[in-house]
Length: 258
Ligand SMILES: [Zn+2]
Image (tube, rainbow, N blue to C red; front, side, top):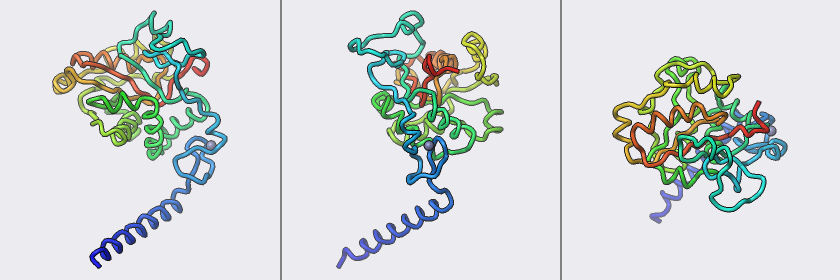
């Protein structure tokens, strides 16, 4: 008999959950995360968009995470990683920045589809779960305050928050600072992008203490030329961390850069 209240409680919770799902289904009918067409499931892709997503999988360069067309064996680096070693230890991205993946990024960034962050972070965990779980802190690429007020949220911070929830690794948002407002990187070449973000990021004194000797994961939505995450990494290096992984949702691959 003692079990009855628990059973009722559980049943009520079930009813409540069902009601919430029903109401949210009515208010926000499930739509494809990329094209927006109505679909059977929320925060998923329709079959057509799903086939258009290119997941980045091994074999890839162990440093830059760029896929190889042939398996050359373990620990092989790309010519680019050897010629221009990045300041971070490794980069991992879930998908190529093209087709439906590009729409998903735009939907998160400009259409306030915040619920997409959880789905995107799930794909990022698939690509970099070990690095994220092993890390001491997850750090989003910061927005300048003025930009934050205009757009109301930082998509990198939303992805970092979702990654933190999925992995249990704490997020650190206040230590890495964007000192000055930079122009949008879109439409700039590599050299211009580097110039644009040079000296734009700084680490607080607290960050220098917190991150010393730690394993860090830096999060951004898209990796294009790497100018932004490289500038952030240089600022983070001042703390002398043990290791810095960059984890992004998408990566522009040579054939998909526009
Ligand atoms: Zn679709």
